[in-house]
Image (cartoon, rainbow, N blue to C red; front, side, top):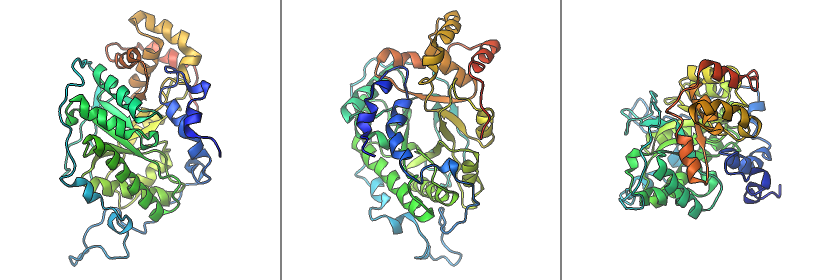
Length: 389
């Protein structure tokens, strides 16, 4: 209970630049989540969601607006998000902070998802399979590392509100001179402590607005994706979380919606709710050579969801670096590149981090070779996959 997040992040066993990737960030927030008695949504039996509010509010049949008994973003929050869409929001201005940006062929996918906006304000962009995830460090460090990532070719960014450095990230985007529409930017919301639909809705929408306030310091006036860091403690709370996301999308401030650490039942809570008008397109999970449950990729794909690994190398390299390096020697690739390539060839994407420019570049250079079937099987059997619970 007395563990400081930054102190936890600085412990020796998670300070390695290479071996810990996104795990550094999740280890840092682990105490926040695990010490919360209602955070373990995966332990709670699934219940059929019962709607008490409408996330996608429309006018009533007689033309009147939503009644005062219905909860919406305007009745809950004192600061309306419409203020964020005013003329005060400035678009990024060009600069010459980056003059030698590298063009690297990074594979991408395009989401075919329904939107709560009809028609959608912005079409969904291509989603690069390689993403840079900011970790828990100050705004100045975030600023410098974002510029490095942009220089070597990253265009997909995972900027969590929990890292507390979205302002530094946003300033780097502005100063880079790279057009905003060339970037895919994802923010996150942590609202898994809120119990019940009403509270989950309110806390989630507040988190959305906090993302926009931080991003606007760098002139970012919309997000390409917003992601729930964790599911709520029960089905009712998840419905509230998702209702807030849908209203945020309806306001035109985000294009795609996503989740993290959701299991199949929690995904179905969203998909089967009668008021769902937009579905998650990404589920961020700790998928890797050392953690690849059977059916995980297929189950998400069947729901139209792409798995993004938030810890692609942290446990893989310490255990299997020599094996992966041996396989990679045939292609003149490192163990890390082989581990990332295995993830992509299995139908997933990944989010990685580094404070080393060479590693930034290395993690992008996995799209110019392909592992053979025998090599894929050999890697998969290094640690047999567990069954999905």
